[in-house]
Amino acid sequence: MSLYKESNMKHFIIAIVCLVMVAGVSGCKRNSAFDPGGGGPAAYQITLKGTANPSTLFIPHNEPQVESVITVRAIHNNGAPVVGREVYLTKDNSLGHFGNLRDSVVRETNSSGEVQVLFIIPRGTVLPAAGTMHIEARIFDDTRLDNPISEIYDFIPIQVKPAEFDETPIRLCGYVRLADGTGLENAVVVLTDSVTGWPIVTTTRPSGSWDANVTYGWQGTVTASLSGFTFQPASYTFGEANPATFSRCDLDFISTDSVSLVVSPESITAAVTAGAYSITVTSSYAGIPITFNATSDQTFISGLPLGNVTTPYVLTVNIGDNSFGSGPRYGFIEITPDNPGVSPVIVAVEQAGP
Image (tube, rainbow, N blue to C red):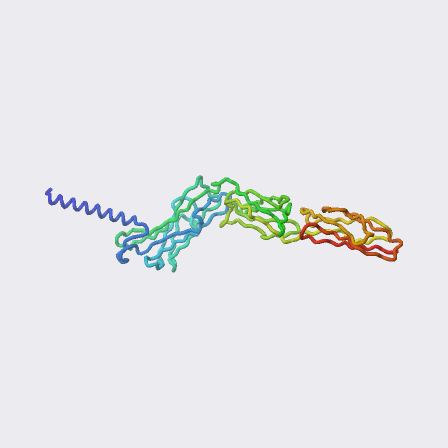
């Protein structure tokens, strides 16, 4: 072979290699491809985002399925939306599926250049360890002159954690109180799992405090109840958007209902002759003792306790003899609580005359 031919062959081989390299680089471009009609850079680009915040999905074990809306947006370099182009979405592992129950989905961009698809991790999915998956969006473009199979694509990485990723119990706690800060003892606090329906039941301490442990990622409602009281808020809810992933001790239930004295009987009708009569004094809520004083406006009513007494209490009242009086006589017993916000109670006394 002549030197001339050999030199031409070398130049030909070099040209082929360069062409292959250029084509290969063009095929690997991310978010860009040469478009003679576009005058240079990529005619458009696409981006993805998901509703997971942060971009973390937890594998449900005994929890409801986890859903994330993936949004794809395609725009021209001038900012105008890319309308009516098919976007091909796929994932890079076996975790979950798209809303069509498949591992891939094709959707056409709308007038805003967007495509939205639902990605689902079903209940009962098991993953041995945490990891990362990617959801990819691609627009296959066979009209580009430099590379008939070029791709414009982007991806969203999603951190995946098993439900049992963190076995540390989550502590939920708070107080059940009156508006004045008085704690309500023996109020029942129920934490109901929204998936299984199983309740965790606990009662408040004398201070009104309560606490319970739930699993990481727990979802459900927390309510408080006590006979004779209504509470605000009515409940606390932990849902898919806000599962219990950290301890909280601000779950207080406040009642504006007031505690009062309950007195029986509310009036005494005494005989002419002297006698002893009983008055039972209790609190409307047994969990809050009420300290009180008992006084009377009449001297013929005696036997009232000296000093403060606490409910429940049976008050014995002595009514003096009225056999030699001039007619019926009247008086009252005032039971005055020491507890702020609790109203006094008046017991009317009427004694028959001779």
